[in-house]
Length: 472
Image (tube, rainbow, N blue to C red):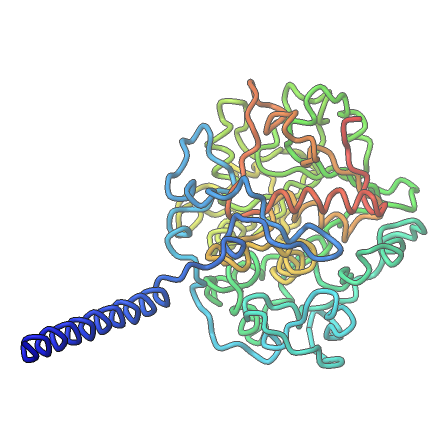
């Protein structure tokens, strides 16, 4: 009997040990799986609200853009394509075509406000550029592609004697620490050199020269060799008519302009800026008829012509006073620029064999062509429109919209700026464009942060740096 009892106890002990061992194995397995399957908190994912900084909500990503990346995998039909929608190749590859090791300048990039007092001091004499670096900015963990130090700087003589211009007022506003008045707005022949090519090849898209070979760059910029290519308002001496301040109307294509009756007011400015699908015929009473500066990239121009042809847009405005301002975010922009300046067909790329006079008219000359400087576009992104998208997988395709670059270029060049047709907080009350035949909601895309831009326009208006048209 004792022997049978002992055997039962031993069996129970063995069973208990096996059970404990099994539970221990399951526990260890669960711990390992938990480590490999852990989920990042939703607040860090693109599309979910993040905590804004103390002074602005600009860093938040709109929640209604949560699924915007899905739009990128399915190109829209031509009739509804967003003019700034990138090519399929751009969507498949979000990294720069060429990313050399970061230099000391990009490794020490500072936050916008901190860097304002430590920006390199540079002089441009006869078009040459040299850096006499000031105090070293604080080290930062920013990735090299941000590049918020070492911008080219030039001393551009004042074109007016205006006492109430943007540059005089900005120091008394919240934007004083962000504003760099010596970053060149435009690039031209004297800006290209092996040293500058090495520096700017670190940055992709509209923010640098990565993806543009040096020979193409030299061939293109060599035709931009006059003051007309260097200055945004190149004909001010003829246009001023005794005025001491340059007044610029910057016109977006927003539906808020429909039935606005602002056309005569817009045309009364010294300069009138427009962009992309700027349809004028039939809408003159609301948007005016003059265009002195037309801003575009080759991609946005071609997409606008495809998307809005049925509404009357067949190409850029054509007039004696119109200047064509390229926003170069691809090598094809440099090729089209060279072709337009030399009246030759585009020699390669997506526009191969295209006749540039089809876009810019028979009388286009090099003096009517301009091209934004990549340092200027990168500076705008870093100092004015630093979106949370820069921390996501879409960081290399993000840039300010073409309209935003146009408006901020005017802010850096004109004395007084009035903005029409730009997004306002009541944007849902209006169709996407003033020329839409029926209501179309505003679309959001991963390569832009239009909500952030809308907030910036409100801030600039409140600071008295622009006058933004809004329905009362």
